[in-house]
Length: 202
Picture 1: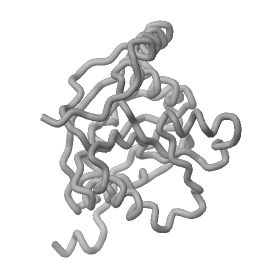
Picture 2 (picture 1 turned 45 degrees about the vertical axis):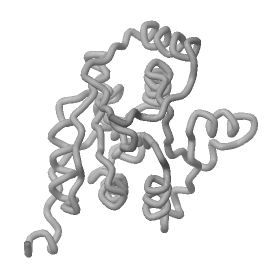
Picture 3 (picture 1 turned 30 degrees about the vertical axis):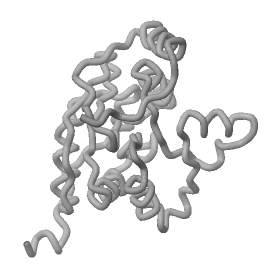
Picture 4 (picture 1 turned 180 degrees about the horizontal axis):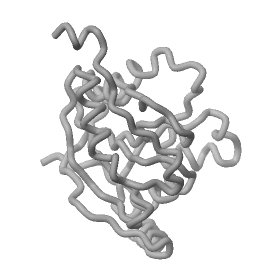
């Protein structure tokens, strides 16, 4: 099978392992044998989620890509963030973002895009659906990853192929994450998404 893109060395792997142990976290499940995919990580309620995500990436020697507010890509941190896989975006300008990312994933030999379906640490409903459109159009699967602060456990899986039925896909993702607890549980909002008119007509 084609492996996910790898990066780093024994030191970075050791460092990621030490950070996870220092924070008291572990993970379970199996990471998929897949060269292109989207990692949907939830709940996202704290900046600590980023630290955990980077520690896991280091531990697995996984080369990732992730979106970040353009305002945080300032010297001297911009080079570090880009080196870690950061892609600066301006949230007020989202036109063309999905199609641009679809093109990048299609052209890449291997790519793992990490994101939070909520799109923000604040309470939001419904969750963002851009990642579902990217996955469907680029024909890449979505791998669900839970950051459960109650258990201090990172849970891998399952891996979903995504259809064009956004209502169905988002609801089954909701069902997977609804039992998880973020660092600030009150910031996580999950509600069943009603089908849009086009899908009712089907």
